Image (cartoon, rainbow, N blue to C red; front, top):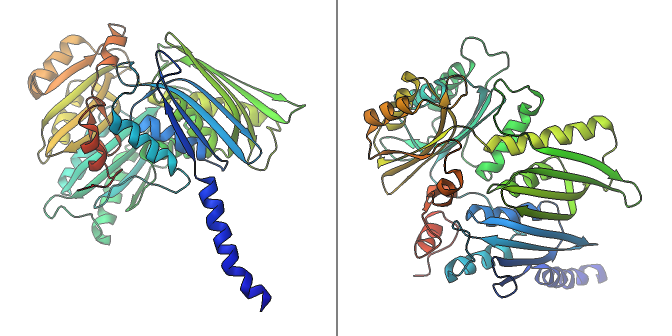
Length: 444
């Protein structure tokens, strides 16, 4: 009887612990002249650093500096962030959203893709593959609402969110799902795929970009030699053990870009490492990251083979998003078969898509493609212009040419957010965008 009487007390105790462990978030614009400080104090658990970084990168904020430190069961993160234009955060709706999101990062969250069916594809990359994929989906009357596609070391990974063209509902009929999987698998295999192509259909999915990392990792893209050598420098990654303290120390030096910290922390987390301390600094176009890590069981890296694997995996994680090529932005009224037509035009003109972000919002298609020639070299500007003439000069715009005004082009780019809304600025649109993404609820 005494034991039974203790359970209600235990429930109240658990509630108290939860209240005590709710992250404390402070956003400070006074300390630093050039960046906004975002501080998070919380109870430590595996993956919580990734959740915090994810909140900031999903808003396309640049993390200029960061300090991560944990002491026993607690951790403290300090992020120095700016908006798309390199300015401090002043919009109250953005600040409130960050405070609310970071304040509930202990709760499991997933992307809000209600009413859509998720297709996961991995296979061998080749010229025109994306065109064939979208042609199959159009033929099977699947409307592509959102999609992200990465290529790395000759492999491709893509997440495509679709609904039925006619009904607008998610695709749940098992026979149709089997047809979609079979047709896409045949496309991915092609004539000479030395590995098994994979397709799967799901009604639920984790964070899209984290899932792309997981798919590439499972496909072991990090073990393959690149088919085409990148013109940019490879990330410099070193791993050493600090025996006295029982940590493995990971150092990364590479070109700075948005979402860099997310890509690195995502990979460490999914490889079952815990970050106990970290320092992130940027200077000009360079980023310097240092992490003190252990396995989830508390042990450091224990062998040379494991050390080399960590180096390979982190280099791959950084390279996957750093696509070469010309950035093309398509903004036009959405219609059935649009993606199949556009990507077929790319293929017919010898343009290879190395990365893509597809989204639709309010019946408008907002798509970003990075393209090279068939050999992975910069595309001929004359071919780019010919493609633009066919698709529509006002619809398809060149946003970024290799090695020309790179920083200027990146600074003013509209950016596709998580669920596809375009965050043109972190201003008055943000509240509506966050609602559309399903990240906040309407207060009306």
